[in-house]
Image (tube, rainbow, N blue to C red; front, side, top):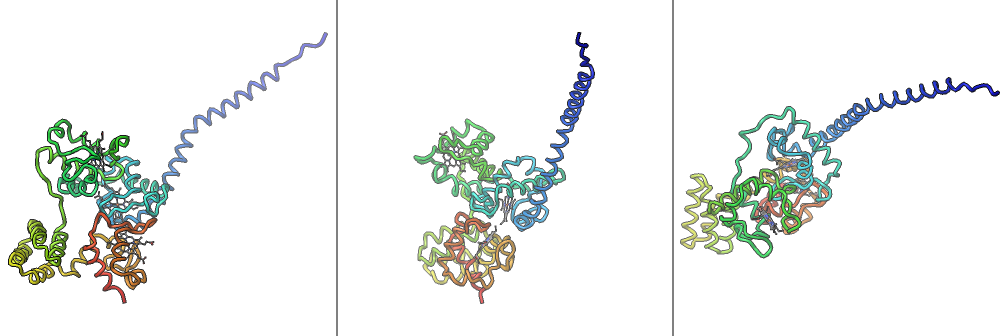
Length: 375
Ligand code: HEC
Ligand code: HEC
Ligand code: HEC
């Protein structure tokens, strides 16, 4: 008879091994979330650090060193950060805000940043949230006049002058239709769009503040009001000056009357004199008055300060953008070529075109200023 084989030691050893493996595995399973968390934290910190450098080099000039806001709005703000998800920030930074000085940063939109760099910028801005101040007073109330300006640049092409509709898109100014829906519905319709039906998604292109301005415009139309776009005082004046030089009295009177509504008392007196001169057909004298109100150097300086200085420095000696003093590029180009360059911008860099922002007339003042910086 074969002796009965004794398997017990093997079974015991096998069982212990299994238990040991299970135990290890369980410890692993138990520790995995902590490990993933640790990796995530490390990733986030790395992204924040990279984002901090990108921010200092590219954004601080307009949004302030600590996001407190300068020519661009404050980003270090509870209101903004609470209301704006990462995805929205990502899109805003990638596409920029058309019609404002906020450039497109994403490479797919002609800017210098990879998607990864945009994500890093978002991580850096997001890290402010826990300590961000409440900036209630500084949040501008929605403004139908701003809305009308955005509408003219962005929506008019499909929805028509004053929202009266075209063959491309329905009317938006019908008070009966407007009363069917509340502001919140319009805010969401504009933000999401109806891409399948030809209404673009504006939430990735316009800022929340701009969409609120558009909703305020629709609210004014709901009440049957007409809203005129806010146009800068200096633009009315430069348009009037242009009209006077073209001997177009009607236009000149129109633009000066518009400028009058924004003028201080001293400017108003001068404009009144110019208006009388134009009506009396003394165009040369009227032109001299207007030039007095709008000396080209002053005009150039003012336009440069708001539109170019954030990147090229207050005196044009450079910052994020190159110095514009003794520039071979500027010296080698005629005024018309420079205007074309400034309207179009330079793809793949932070130098966005000013197509929707400045008129050729306004650019020519800036070019006049830049010419004084050449040897
Ligand atoms: C030349 C000036 C300028 C530069 C440089 C600039 N911005 Fe802006 N940015 C603006 C302006 C102006 C706005 C407001 C646009 C508007 O009216 O909606 C803005 C808006 C924004 C907003 C939306 C804020 C809001 O309240 O809706 C974000 C986010 C933002 N910028 C991030 C950035 C980041 C990140 C960078 C750098 C990579 C940057 N900006 C560089 C001018 C600038
Ligand atoms: C490329 C053309 C186009 C542009 C630009 C455009 N829209 Fe539209 N929009 C449409 C079309 C088409 C519809 C109708 C969609 C449908 O049939 O549901 C529409 C519908 C709408 C509606 C819903 C109207 C209703 O009563 O149902 C609103 C609100 C609106 N657009 C606002 C805007 C605003 C604000 C802008 C500018 C930021 C804008 N649209 C720019 C094409 C456009
Ligand atoms: C958001 C930042 C920004 C703003 C705002 C901006 N620029 Fe620039 N600009 C740049 C950058 C960056 C370059 C360099 C692009 C490159 O790398 O080729 C540049 C290049 C230029 C150049 C070409 C210089 C050369 O030697 O190639 C001119 C001219 C210029 N800018 C003028 C202007 C004027 C005028 C304005 C205002 C109307 C303006 N820029 C606003 C960032 C900006």
